[in-house]
Structures are given as C-alpha cells and as structure tokens.
Image (cartoon, rainbow, N blue to C red; front, top):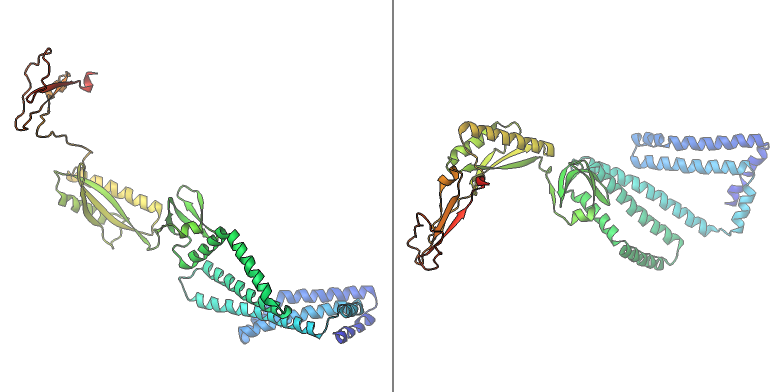
Length: 414
C-alpha cells in the first residue's frame, strides 16, 4: 500500500500550478462519468461476442478500475499521498485487514454477478411461460435478490467477525420480537406472496370477495385494489382475500346466465320450453356452444317455473345486464305472440271440510255489503245452511249444529 501511494508523488511534482491541477481533476472526473454512462454498451458488446458472464465481468472490472484510477490521479495531483500514507500508518492497517477487505470486495462482486446471472436465467425460464405475468416475474426477481444479498452479507460478516454465532442468535431473537409485533403485517405480506403465485385472479378479472364485487386493477404484496361497478376503488387486504371465498367470473372466459320464467298452469309447458329455446338460440349475446338449456325447476305459487340458461362470451358486468335485458324482452314478445301467459302472483283460498265459506258476488256488483257465512258441525259431514233472512234479535247458537253470521263491508262501499 505504501509503495502504491509513494508512486503517485511524481504527479504532484509534475503538475505544480493550481490551474493545471484543476484541469487534471476535471478530466479525471469526466473520464469516470463517461465510463459510468457507457459501461452498459461495453457489457453488451462483450456479451454479443462471448458469454453474458464475461460481459458482466468486463463491465464490473471497467467500473472498478476507472474508479481507482480516477481516485489515484486526484490524490496524486493534489499531493495528498503523504497524508493518506500517514493516516494508513496511524490506523495500523495491516496485511490481515487488507486481505479481509479484498475478500469482502470479491464476495460483493460475486454477489452482484450471481444476481445478474439469476435474473437472466429467470427471464429465460419465465419468458417461455405464458401463464406467468410480468408482475410475478418482478416479484420473483426481487425475492431472489433479497435471498442472495442476505446470504452474502452473512458471509461478509463472518469474514470480519470471529464469533458470528452470537450475532445470529441476537438477530434471531430480534426477528421473533419483530414478527410478534407485526404479525398482522407479516401475515398480509405472506398472503400477498401466496396470491401472486397461486394466481386465483389477475389484473382485469371480474371477482367477488364477500360483499365486494368489481374489476381487479392492482395486486400488491399488502393489498388488492378493485374497481366496483359504481366507480369506487376498494382496497382489500390480502389476508382477508386469502381467508375468504373468492368468485372469479372471468377465469373461464365465459359466464352462464339464468332467467326464471313462470308459465301458467293452464299453459302447455312443452310449448313454452320450445319457445324459450328458440328465443335463446336467436339471441345475439348467447353462445352456440354450450347450447342454451331450458329446465323445469319447480311448481311455483302461480305457475310452473322454467329456468332459461345460456352462456355469454368475455364476461363483463355491462355485457351480462345487456344480455339479460335482451333475453327478457324477447321472451315477453314471443310469449305474447304465442298466447302463453306469464301468471301474476295469486293465491287460492279454500275451506276445510267442517267449514263452509260463501261470498255473495251480487252484493259486490250492486255496491252493497258482501255476506260471508260459515257453518260448522261436530261430525264434519253436514253443513248448516244460513237463514234466508237472518233475525237481528237472534242469538248465535253455540251448540253442535249452530252457526254464526259474519257481515263484511266491501271496500267499494267506502
């Protein structure tokens, strides 16, 4: 080291004026800047004519050599070699320290080269995989960088520290404390990595998470952002997504739509099913394969419920509602043209065997009161007829064959 510093003294003796020293310093720094901006070109030039590893070595060697050369020129021109040599002597830097510094420098250079090599390998491997997104490639590269640099720093510390075990034990306890204090954040980060590699959905997919529904706009390590159909941006933590049921309506590239259609009990169900199938087959939104399907689902309160099912391509919320609207309008037109009734909600009232309920329809037409009379018997076999002209002074009988008269005013009388 002393020999190298002493060899730079001739620069201060050769360049004596301050103006020349400034010129030499500017030239040295300018040369360093030129190398910093052009070393990539040198690296590509060497890589094209040999191997990528040689290009990395050439670029790193050029940078290192240029930095040392520029530093030596500046120190020698300004006559600071003696001062620097005195500082080295006072600090008692021996051969062992220099050897450790050289080993550390080599390890750092090797780490830099290994990271670049691994990045190149990952790009080649993932470049042929169409299922891996650019976001996943970037996350994989960053994770690889963290792992390699962590191992390298541990090795460098092992070069300078004799008892590295105590330091690692302390770091382990520190990691446990930090993990317990930030377990929620760590859980979210781990869930983010799981989502990125498990890929239950991607950016642009239409998903449903619990009560939230929308289009995925961003996936980070901490949270996932979706845009709802109301134009709102919703941030969902990744740990919530990992522990919830996620419905991806864009995964298969198609979506099934089902419309429940009620058909009157007096109508021909087979004819109604054929009409529905023809309507869905002619619908511009419906796919030809899978074909539309008509199924009988249940006996409803007012009619037979048929399920009209068809598929649409490229699922989108707007596309789905347009398809449903077009299908419902077309079904209504065809049913009206063919005379198939879609029943209104209705209920049928009936009496039990021991009760006779009668409503006088003529009273409603005449605007009078409607008489509703019931008669019950003990044996349930006979029904008592009401009196033609009920006596207002007559008390209702509570016996086995007695009846009670009820009078109900029709709403039109009000």
